[in-house]
Image 1 (cartoon, rainbow, N blue to C red):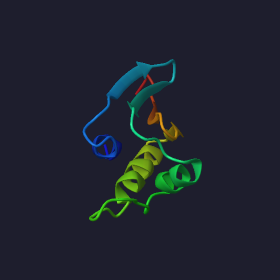
Image 2 (cartoon, rainbow, N blue to C red; image 1 turned 180 degrees about the horizontal axis):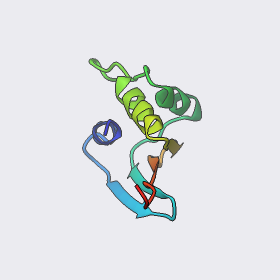
Image 3 (cartoon, helix red, strand yellow; image 1 turned 90 degrees about the vertical axis):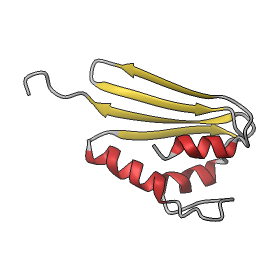
Length: 101
């Protein structure tokens, strides 16, 4: 997933990354949270659209675009929340397959 290596880079070798999974009645939920510097609301919106990178010499911003498109192809949702100075959380919600399939 694109956001895990990006979380490591954003924290400059210091901080924590938490991976969390959950099964609800209708979705599998995957969360990746970091304790990095956070992302402003304007930049977070651009990151989620894809094609945007910041501070990476070789970055193209396509990783998040691939994640978003893949999640959408599976009828899921990609969400993110961030607060400058206290980290970022990306959340993927993927629908569970019908039990009769």
